Amino acid sequence: MGKRFLWGLGAILAIGGVGLGLFFFQGGRLEKSDLGQAEGFQIALVFSGAKGDSALWLAAEEAAEGLKGDLDAFISLREKVGQEGLLASAEALASRGAALILLDGTVEEAGILALAKAHPETDFLLLGASLENGSNLASVYGDVRGAGYLLGVLAAYQTRNDVVAAVAGGEDRQSKGMLLGFQYGVASVDPNVQFHGDFASRQGADGSPGKLAEGFISYGADIVLSACGQEDREVFDVLENSGVYGLASDPAFFASHPGTALAAVHGDYLTVLADQIRAAAAGSFEGEAVAVPMALEFNEALKARIPARTLERVLAVEEQIRKGELDMEVAVPWQ
Image (tube, rainbow, N blue to C red):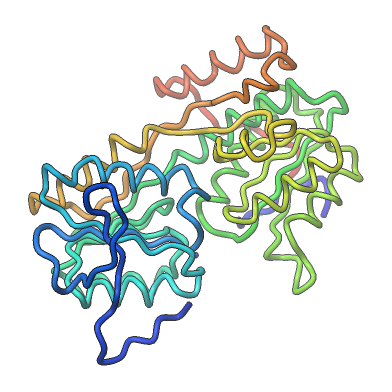
């Protein structure tokens, strides 16, 4: 760890000859059914964790539920399958006749590309990834560089120690983009602010996002960005115990850590996801990666601790990003 930015930031199902029991939402109830026997447009959602772990996952479920009547759709939900279970779950669902699978974007890249090729009759929509194949594999993801930039601007204005940090889990493209944007945002305000950033995946068997956060706090960081996906909770637990503010990629932490999560980013995922589901149902799914513009959301319990002038400046930057008027590549002293 150090004062630097490092480049680099998804229950195996045994599929046998027996039918695969799945859960369907019908009439507001969760019912067990067999996807292969369902009629209508068949939609499946597959998440490594609980659906409430991600605002994007919740938006995917809401979009599907909102279109269920119009599309005469059956919706199956598989959550908490673990990262190692994503690909096997998707394969099972495609084999059972799912027309559209909305899938946790942390799924293994080569595996999902091969699966999409093997099942051209199924459309796959990755949530939180930027992968596409031009036909039946698309993705929806937040503009993470812009989101990171916004959070970096806020961190640089808000720090009292002139030390900020960012913790990431794996070295996926989304996490890389978030951390890169964060350091650009910090440097755009004050290049003299110290920045510490690293990836838990680079720390070996004993490394963890929580341990990284503890290390950065020992260096004096008083604002920490967490971009660790499901492991964000570990980081926020450390921040809460240390009295340090955290910046999140999901507003869900306002509820779980109301005295720690200062701000988060969010996007209008619902509209974009609904458009993708309609396209799949209409046979016009294009297999493209779609970036969703991100906006800042402040924790109302802590918003009064952010000076009015800081809020004004950060929101002005947000508007510039939205309009495409801001060059987010800033010279940084940490590389």
